[in-house]
Image (cartoon, rainbow, N blue to C red):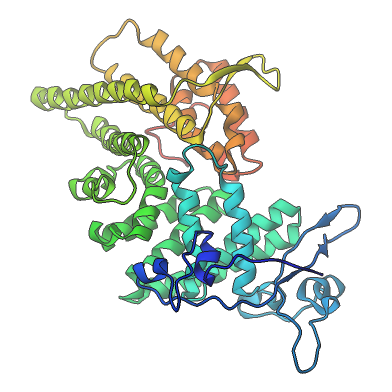
Length: 479
């Protein structure tokens, strides 16, 4: 065993990986956020390795924290009797509720460590890490573990699945599925409580479970249901509850998912309403930069797109005034997006063109982006423009549209190869653009997009259900 050194900050700051001023008795950061500072006294920590289950599969570094030896007895916990090792020796371990083996229900500290692994794999650090909202949101969660059963269960489910997939241990993945059942029960109980049901932890747990569905895909529509539940919970809570730092970061991290859920449900997105626009662009926010302001502006335009998709379905085409008004708003949105993209390119340069590392015959030249922010916003921009410009085609002929479609589809497809560079959420950042590109692409390109999404599904199974040959990927509800 090897002792693991720790930083000198308070326990909460150490868990969140933020700088602590070490003021005593309580640090300034904890005081500012109105929470009790746990202090600075820490126990020694030790790490050990547990072999991966089965032969010929290498070893899996499974991290568990052990407290220092009892000062009276001098005894230390026996690794041979640890849950992981004992379980390999005897598969008929005792089980808890819902048949979940007690050996896999880890202490909170183990989940914190596994969550840290998940967070590191979620994205890469670049010049704009400060606005990587998913990573920032995940960094808040460790300090909340141990205070909410529903959040504890949701996180345990997610990180167990991630660790199982990362290490190739199918047994751990199956147990994560059992833990998912427990998490759903905890969520049901939390939502039934008037106070706990609208708490930040319950919303956080709902969003954590939506991530689990992205990576496990228990059913192809389960992700939509979780996202829809989170969307309704946000609306029930109201925009005012999302003004504090944690809830604002949580909203920022999942606003794209809320828009995608609205597309899937063929409804307007609640983020397009005025009260939510205020929250998402509040000048009093502690987060402020040119890139952030451009990002917030883009999300406001993006949130309007599901309403446009719904509007064109319900449009009364025999009502001339309604038709003129609707397409006037659509043209205004297109012009706003075009202007936004010009200003965005003034701040973040175009990607570098490089040869495909896989020698792809369809797209031999691909794009390499300098940061996730540039990659994500560019792909989503072209996705929005494909959607809106092809909606306009239903009322006015544009001789340049076919050439524009070819260009925009190419711009989206050239980003795919580099998506995985941006962590486990990289491919998800490309899916909206690919769905829109699929809608207007020729048959060979449609087949190429479907093949790319099938490849992405190895890491994120939900990808295989994003498009279907012969289906309208925007307006047709998935079977």
